[in-house]
Amino acid sequence: MHGNALTVLLSGKKYLLLQGPMGPFFNDVAEWLESLGRNAVNVVFNGGDRFYCRHRQYLAYYQTPKEFPGWLRDLHRQYDFDTILCFGDCRLLHKEAKRWAKSKGIRFLAFEEGYLRPQFITVEEGGVNAYSSLPRDPDFYRKLPDMPTPHVENLKPSTMKRIGHAMWYYLMGWHYRHEFPRYRHHKSFSPWYEARCWVRAYWRKQLYKVTQRKVLPRLMNELDQRYYLAVLQVYNDSQIRNHSNYNDVRDYINEVMYSFSRKAPKESYLVIKHHPMDRGHRLYRPLIKRLSKEYGLDERVIYVHDLPMPELLRHAKAVVTINSTAGISALIHNKPLKVMGNALYDIKGLTYQGHLHQFWQADFKPNMKLFKKFRGYLLVKTQVNAVYYGEMIFNKIKKDKKR
Image 1: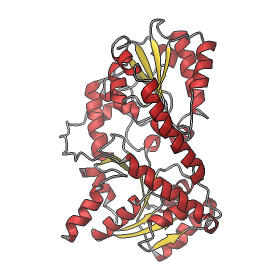
Image 2: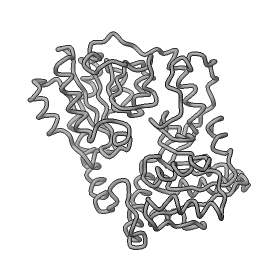
Image 3: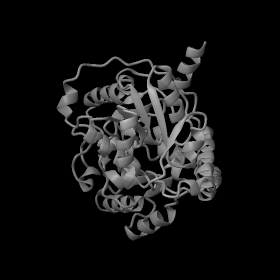
Image 4: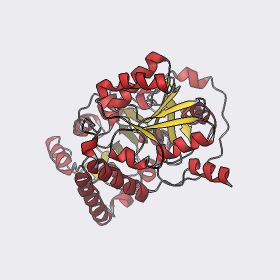
């Protein structure tokens, strides 16, 4: 794990852990904190949370989100925690906790998927993504000294572990649903619906291996530096709901395709990249086909699935996103980038600040010296070298301690 982000995480004495990622991660974090001499208490909100905290004492919350601040106030009188941990700061219960913590001067730390994946996860005090407290002033980063590159363990997130933990989480949530009648999940909470989606995702992936086998070679050769890459996010991404003006990913697709049809160079192409975690939940081909016809784009729009993002970025002319962390990857590849929502990296000098209509033919390149400073600061202040699903350094620390 790396420096300052870890120091911030460990600067408390008494921790209250709210909802974590699906799986044992927050259980492991609590045990890890206790092994370092801190106090840690987990709160469970549904059967899935309880299942993954079953080997330790926990507190269960059965009331509504509106009543959560009062519950926290009463709990704080008995257990004077100084730090709240949660995964994601846009879930309703976490929003309530954040407001309450701020009013009481209690630290609120949010975990999130890594800004610099796959070897990192995010930990920030006060909020993540567009709620991040990181400065947006480019001059702040320009004045920073160069930061040494830290040692990074090559950790590999496991897709199978993610799927397995999700399966058990949803099943236990459904099985014990009557014990938590007031709980409302931030997305679908039906194990049967999710199972259908994952099965559909599997066979679609196999299908795309066949149907799209010739697409990447074409992009790398014939269309090299001739296409704009539009990155899609999962349909129920809290980043879209909370940090953009879009009600749905389809609105973003429509706006990008319309603008591209009117203002992009006529010899250019638009590649729309489906999010791999959304493969079984949504399919935008009918929409893209209809809009292509409506906007007179003929064969200039290419809808892709499961093609490697590094290769797509390397051969793209420029990139458009709502506010995906793929935007940071685009900057790593020195690609002109237009952000359509709110993002912590949407900084003058890094991203195009004008209208989308002008972006297609703008003579803009990200300032890579500025990006190097920004990335170094981002890494030190917000990133922890760990993964949510796989061999976790938290576990390694515990194992080493037992020897």
